[in-house]
Amino acid sequence: MRILVVEDEKRIADFLSRGLESAGYAVDHAPDGQTALDFAHHTEYDLVILDLGLPDIDGLQVLEKIRNRKASPPVLILSARDTVDDRVKGLEVGADDYLVKPFAFVEMLARVRALLRRGQPTPERLQVGDLALDCIRRRVTRQNEPIELAPKEFSILEYLMRNRGRPLSRTMIVEHVWDMDYDGLTNIVDVYIRHLRSKIDDPFPVKMIQTIRGIGYMLDLPEKSGVRAGDLT
Image (cartoon, one colour):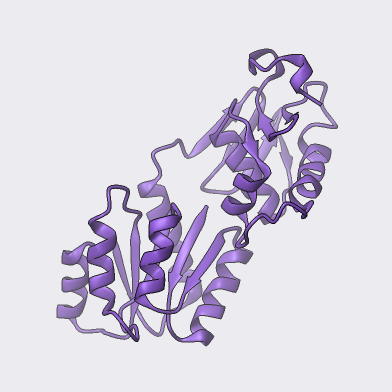
């Protein structure tokens, strides 16, 4: 899942970005309101974390513009504005939650996960054959046996399972999971796919992660994939 952090204080932005990335999320950082709006226009985010005291545009104006878009992600306000009136105004303008600075990261992360659950139309538990992924507890099992995954491995698997039967390009996977653009040279996706296969495919007779020649990867049961054998490697 991809999160946009809108925060002009670099120290706080770096703290948030590192913490969220360690929790398995892809993070973009916008240091001002206009950059945030540009990012929101070109990228589909699962959540926006928004500071109100921005150097160019007031955060509430940024919130209003985000809410005017057809596809509007959940918004968590992080702000030093701590009066009841400030919180009420932020929620009335369209924020989904409001957290006052200073804050504990564990509390913020719990609120992030709650908002993502609320805004996520897909199931909290994904199942493909005997492979199961619990999106809330971040657990994976196959044939009821637990499988330990690193945060990025979990994020890739979740993305593949949410798009079961749909070929995903390396570009799509990188842009969804990592805070970077795919430059056509990196093999980071292939490396992580190999790691995933070693854990969820190699020990089992049925292989679910399929390489789609000329495109990227797809997860599905082989007999239900609908992809011609010549397209798979």
